[in-house]
Image 1 (cartoon, rainbow, N blue to C red):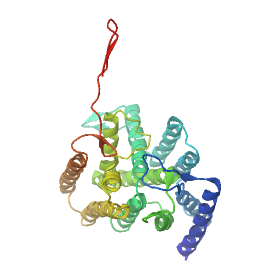
Image 2: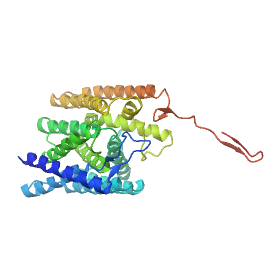
Image 3: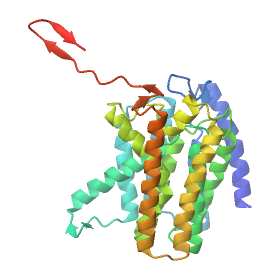
Image 4: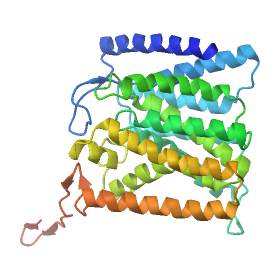
Length: 358
């Protein structure tokens, strides 16, 4: 009954937000890097944040334990991200808040920074810095995946249902499952308006960054509780898609915090004419298969050696397939929006002859 009321309430609030978005111009305008052809209301991912606030109220009313550090962290960067959706904020300013949020996340996880690597003891500050960079990167990778209709919602639902199954049948690692349910409901509602040929709204950074830090928290909690790194496969498609694209853009000398159109899913939709819905379903299907592998391997308690061996092969083969297929679509070159990038041009300046060679 609680979740039916939540669904109806969030559905009503979503439509209120649409009215406010139209009135105050909270829209994603069309530009040369857009995957849409008309202005669309953005920042609708705030519905996740509102639902989470309802969860905090519900938990307090029911006397359910709340992990406040991760809650404050998620709400903090959600607020900053929402303002960024309304009016672009300098990326270093956003990054500072993300760092603060991730520090709160690590505090919540109670991570022991006296860790060893290959039998060698690492200094606490080295371990802290490594994990800080890793978690900030993971949160942003989740944000980067939000590029076509329904993709971030679809991948989030696969993740949420996977961790619910794991928590029920493999190992109890979630402090309370109500938190997951309060995230699933708004994700379904958002999908009703976003997983369309012509979407009513976009998630915006407020939703993708918020979901990102929540997903990273659940994934890190699970790995810490089980000491089993095959659970990374629950996040693997995002690592491969967003991670490779970030590396590609760095090699191209681009600002990775600026919009672009060279994700594989963007190439498939924008340059090769595949529908957003088909591409999204394809990605969700692949992640579902990967998640089923992890879930069932641990449900049937297969040996950790077998899981690592098969998991590593699966991850490598998927990564290799992704890279080769993307290079094929791009004509064997690093591309921008499907067009061959001009070769780097070396500029030589000769003072004595005043000649430029380009």
